Amino acid sequence: MAKRFVVVSAHPLESSLSAHLTALVTRQIAESAHELQLFDLYQQGFDPRLSPQERQSYYAPQYDASDVKEEADALQAADVLILIFPTWWFGLPAILKGWIDRVFVPGTAYDHAPDFGRMIPRLSKMTSCIAITTLGSPWWIDRLIMWRPVRRILGTAIIGTCAPKARFSMLSLYNCEKLAPARLAAFETKIKQAIEQTLK
Image (cartoon, rainbow, N blue to C red; front, side, top):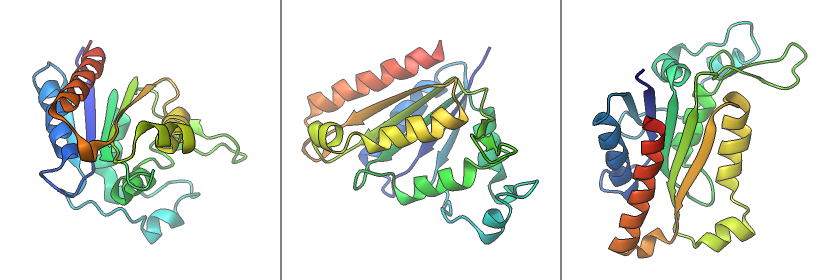
């Protein structure tokens, strides 16, 4: 049975390393028998700002996701979600954070509990989420000093809450400003292997 892959890419430059990795990922999926839907947030001009009507409806009986219906429908239908982005200041790019703010919302990614306790997950179809990111810093700063904040936020707070059955993995390319071709090739191999696992 064909799976639905949703790839979200977030970098302003078409010549960026993130764009290169996005092309690598989408090509591999496109060559398979599975379905692919790509959201290049900068290319499509995605507005990361939560609108007044969206926030107003956050706790209403029906959340207003009409302005991001395509993205919300794609998220709910995704078997595999792949996020490709640079890590800036040990956080997500603003446009990707805004995508999460506007798409991982009540009625799409989760439901409010009647007593506003623990969120009730809705992304039961999702089996895997892969985050692919680049960092200028060395690995030890991210892991030993910062305790991998992006991984914890994505894996625990977002995917862990809204898609608890999904396997979360993160591939991080450190020191990307001093990148030798051999190290890039090794990272590309890791990506291909991770994607291959989800294609089975």
